[in-house]
Length: 567
Image 1 (cartoon, helix red, strand yellow):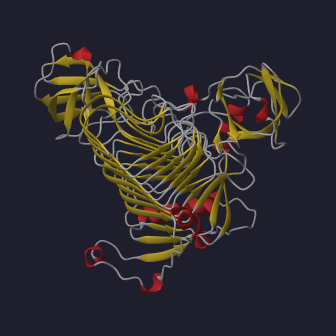
Image 2 (spheres, rainbow, N blue to C red):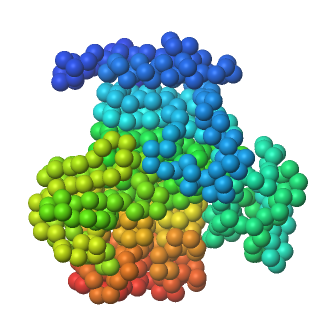
Image 3 (cartoon, rainbow, N blue to C red):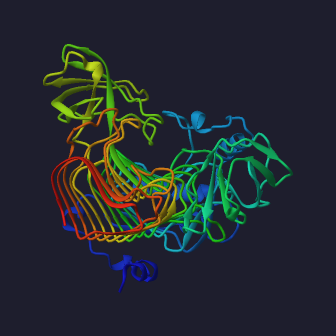
């Protein structure tokens, strides 16, 4: 069976005979497995009533009863919160300004947790066919300080989408008109920080989004935007997210052994899944896709994992119409702000801080590379001996063992102890803004996937100094992927349609950073606008074998490479 047929036709059937569940001997002493239903707490699907209190009581039960299997019978559940609705209203009314992210996406900004499973142990949520319909901007599912947590089958969506969707009705030389759905009244104060359009000619998002476009509101649902579009875009679907980043649909924070299986995310005022400071996350048959009748899904990344350990794995997933990468896996470069003896003050100067909006705090025993800012080349390593951080603040100091440079302002510290392996297999990324897979970690397999219509390069391996996200790669295999019509716009790396192994640093002249790169058996179909199918820069021990590249100006471009084998 070919890959497309397998992903689209395989039905995930989770059969759980909870009455005859067999416990592992090592678990028996810690807790006794038990099964409860959300209906036991008063949540009845499809009755049109607000299920929030009942669902939260069920989540609280899971937090306090290790080993619980919580069953959500199929149907729609309303998750409504007054504070979340107030925030939504304030954003849409313009109270948070034209770029709400700058107000609502800050460290420790107060927000609403929909279902809070913090502190859970051995909990499984069985929710095949259950739809969590959120009302108000929130974080629908919070998995924090948890161990052995499984979420299976749940669909997350919003009654009122966190974007306005419409179609292009008219195009002239300097502007275009969009007719939005009659779901909400469009006002002059409503924030439209970005416009994304669907381009049927490439089967993906139009190459260039419009940021903070000047506009004239013509009536309650029609808006004239300043900007140039080709005439063929008349009739194209348009999404206007009302913010960039906010809370994710699912947060995985400081947790171990988390499994997300058969989950669907239709929309979120932010990312789909954010994993931070966690170990071993499995994402199986996740779908981040538009709701029926819509073209776009999450406002930003479908998934994003930072400062994790163990393994982050994807298998059989589907991504479509999201406003950024399908996944981004990385650690953070920290600026050194002061050094007193062996004590170092760190500051994370990433443009949006961490995507969990809590600091990246090293631990005693962690190894931190001393990285030159201009080149991102590690020039030493220190070990963390002590940590100074107060909960609720972003200030972090560490006492280290090892040699620090005298000109410490020229260097980052990067925690290589918080880098997971990444597996991304048998998945489809179809039509999104930016990259498909963005990998900044070590020990990577990206195999047997299909990428189509990504505005950026489909697979991007490389550190990005601007975002303070690293690090350079070691031991990477990119094999048997099919890539079509990618790399025509936002997020394209050095003109590469298919695969880019690069470094985003101020000075990359003759530096060797990536090591052990195998790019084998991939098929890349680009266009004459793509400089190449594959670009490899600043890398050693590179093997390029049996790759087929069509349509691009050149198949492969390499710069500053060593021990390169091309077949």
